[in-house]
Amino acid sequence: MTVPSPSADAEPPPSGRRIPGPPGRAPGAAVAPPTPGPADDTPGRAAADDAGPVDAGLVGAAPPAAAPDAHPAGPRPPDARPPDAPAADPSEVPPPPTPPPTGALPGPPPPVHPVDELPRPTRLLATGLQHVAASYAGVVAPPLVIGAAVGLSARQITFLVGAALFTAGLATLLQTIGFRGVGARLPFVNGVSFAGVAPVLAIADGQADRRDALPVVFGAVMVAGVLGFFLAPYFCRLVRFFPPVVSGTVITLIGLTLLPVAFGWIQDGHPERPATGTGLGLAGATLLIVLVLRRLLQGFLRQIAVLLGLVAGTLLAVPLGAVDGSATRHAALVGFPEPFHFGNPHFQVSAVVSMSILMLVCMTESTADMLALGEIVGRPADERTIAAGLRADTLGSAVAPAFNGFTNSAFAQNIGLVAITGVRSRFTVAVCGLVFVVLGLSPAFASLVALVPRPVLGGAGLVLFGTVAASGIGVLVKAGLDRGDNVLVAAVSLGMGMIPVVSKTFYAGDAVPEAVRTVLGSGVSAGCLTAVLLNLAFRGVGRARRTAEAPRVAEGEKPLI
Image (tube, rainbow, N blue to C red):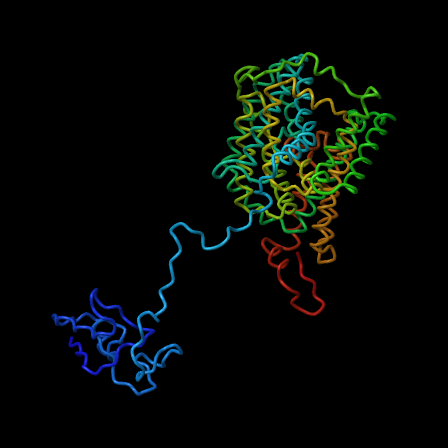
């Protein structure tokens, strides 16, 4: 290839395209032609030769002759010198921009989502204690019932309660902090599922001695937890079957099914008995205090109104003799839950099948709870989040029997607390998990939390659980109950979900198989299953989500959810 030699009177390159020469050469001096070399027959170079003269910006090339107003490479840029202008002083050439230092950020860091914010220590501890107060009764209730049913002594029941607190704390830390692929990293409390009480009692009935039932139960829970862990990546795909009309129905059911729990607390744990005047008075006073504090206080104090209400209600109960301090008198200061305290696990096929069905029920409830909490905290739960959350549930359940614990699942009680306080940080619930671990290691501290009378918890529970139901109604309103068959899906599903809540013996007959009874015996599971099936029947798989996001396609036609 022949490179044209620069002419003696060739103009220097414009200031905007000045080419620095070798060291020691004066600015503006002509560039020496390159040493001729062998011809280059590569296609790219041949194409460049056919394209015309080499651009003036290339070292060793001279600009072609051009009109006075023409630019060597086309139209002259606005800041380029005319060809007849004298050469510019090198000092006039602006220096190149200074590159940013290595490791410097191009801009401010992205904002932290409220779920991932780390509150101040005082706020962190106070809000964490609120979650402890809201979920403590739910954690200790199943081991109390199971321990009494299988004939354990009072000391053994106390040990079982401490083990439940310890394993609930570990499962909560898995859910909120977690590690790769495990943990939804949402403000979730994981604890002993009350849905597991009925299958455990059924397993105990099948043993020759009910006191030998716990090793069989623990073995079945371990197997069911492992199976659930490996099923989590597939089970999470059910999220596609939860359009707003389904998720709103499930969230509403969570709140409605929890309200009877608050009623039972007001009745001092005896739903079959009428509420006493003391119980009604304490519950009403606590409810009133929480409402007044929520109305009058601002900022941080407003967020811990529930905790302040619980403290005030407990103080009111002291002169009435409603505070039972007997649990603190003989409680040990330190008591680590000895692994397999009740014996090595036994594996029976019938028990494994029963607990595996229970695990599927708990996974369904946890999925619904994650969807509800995702809406409340502003971070919708996708398939990846649900899969990680289910792994935390099932892994916690698989490990719990080693420390004498039972099946763990997400606690819906704390969803209402997140909604009413507005504190969405998952680290507040992580503090709750740490407190549970400490309580499990110290029965003396655990007994202090038990000082709160149940009617006081019931008064606060009315606010917490009612808030969950109201949140679900809000989702249903956004879904549009006037669209298509949404009102039928919501109405029938709510009715099916309320059956086991209103009538405990509805499915107790022999006409309902045990496996079906386990599923339908949970109001959330029954209503959730009904809503999913009805939505599929009325709209078809996948159509619900597409039509929910689509605009009206015709005049007067209403899109379906």
